[in-house]
Amino acid sequence: MRDLKTRAVFGLAALGVVLGVAGQASASGMGVTEVSAEGLGRANSGEVADTGASALFWNPAAIARGPRGLSIGGHYRQDETVFADVATQITRPIPPAGLTLPAGGDGRIEDASPEFAAPHFALALPVGDRFALGVSVFRPFRVQTTFGPDSWTRYDTVRSKIAVTEVQVAGAARATDWLDLGFGVTANRTDAYYDQAYPNLDPSAPDGLSRLKADGWNYGFTLGAQAHLERVTLGLAYRSKIKHELEGDIALSGLQGPLAGANFAAPAEARFATRSTVTVGGRYALTEATTLNGQVMWSNWDVYDTLDVSFAGSEVSIPQRFKDTTSVALGVDHVLNDAWTVRGGVQYDPTPTRDTLREPGVFDSDRWIFAAGASVRLQPALTLNGALAYTRFEDANLADLDVFYGGTPAQTVSPLSGAFEGHAVSAALSLDWAF
Image (cartoon, rainbow, N blue to C red; front, side, top):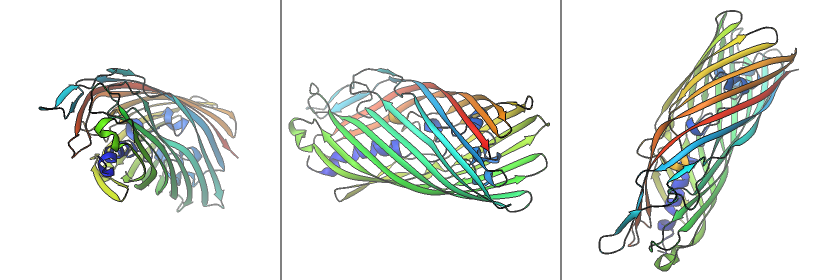
């Protein structure tokens, strides 16, 4: 019981599953797609081929041929979710053959993820006739759950939170009359916490509790290009994978009897890599008033194969087995008159998680996004944008094998088995100023 590796590894592994999806752009159901009000209104179709400061997140080349511009706004999201127990059990090493009981607790948790709001900002500054500099600040990732210490999920997740803020500094150039190129450097600030219940050997005793907090700065880069043809604009962008190193502290308390010696507190470090992405899209002027948009994004999620954890002189590697994904979005913009433009779109975004390993703290599944929006020109250089979107998560199973005190006589096993369903409503507003 005094082996720190035995005591801490599961809590760090579970945090790693949650942290591992904290990457760039939208990371399936946990990503924040509301990085642009215009983009949200067309379900993020064609963003890689759009121009101006508001498209800087998607493609650093977007600012190469525009005027000085500022885009500032905010977004709101509310997830409506249900987490239901199916057959979660716990087996304690109680003679003669172990004692297996239902995990118990509240078997149906609704709305475990609270509503949230966050700002977004982008600035583009031309430098001469052919160059531009830009800076953007977004919140591209957020996941937060609160199940509670009496939930059926407690041996996997009591509560969790990850918030990622990305700052990008970019430069772009008009390489030719029709080709623009861009490059950006990104810095991601990640803040997280994760709480998990630990079972005592006595089924009548209250659970212990593991608490872990971690944070860190992580860096990457973006590359982009746009081809501006007669009626078509094509865009291509690449986001590098990010090697994350998060430092924090973990503490385990509340264990009783023969497990009391396992209570501890210690610093810890987690290392893992998150996806690179390749995004291809286009915008086609069907008529003077109507523009069709399309976008495909491939995410190289299989780089998140293992999580490496270091603490107290020990190091372990935990398999994660994420899979590559490809999302597709289609949309349309239509100019009604000199003042008003309306838009809409639909996106399909599959999950990188596998059916055999999906935790409540990462409530992800394949999803569809249906969106609509509008822009109104308040003044020649001032435009107000708004959007609403509905996200429908596909029903999915939750599964994980939680092992406590592994490799000791106290080894306790809790195979988690549940189901997840839900939807989300999003809204965004922004003000674009060309100056």
